[in-house]
Image (cartoon, rainbow, N blue to C red):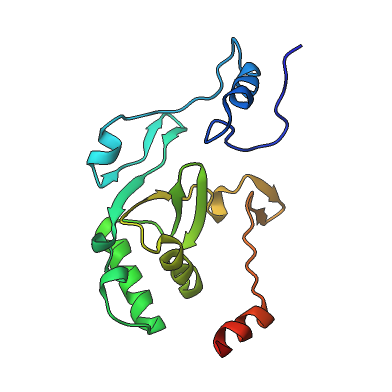
Length: 173
């Protein structure tokens, strides 16, 4: 009997060797996944277009960027309108769709480049990182996996919250 991992996480990242071994056993004599790796090309090019085979998406469009590549990080303003305009110019320059994800290892953060709160969240998430990767978000409204009548549902939800008490404590310090 082979052990089975029943939760979704990246067990191969920074785990103890015996745990990694036990988790790998579930894929013995099986293909653990299907992916397309482009080797050094993935890091050497700032933009890699979507790669498709028939109606199968093998790799979503990917942008390997630095802060200086995005006007959002080079303008000196806190104005919402200025940030939205900078995001629009960035989209035009890099031919980005309105919905992208900020990818880091197996973590992806959904970003709506037409929403100021989402843009600010992206700026905060990138923080001091010099390099980062954006990928196209594949599940737009007309391509949702779950449909009921004329309604579309997403396979991901984002819930933001904050602690008023902690915020007031920080402001008072």
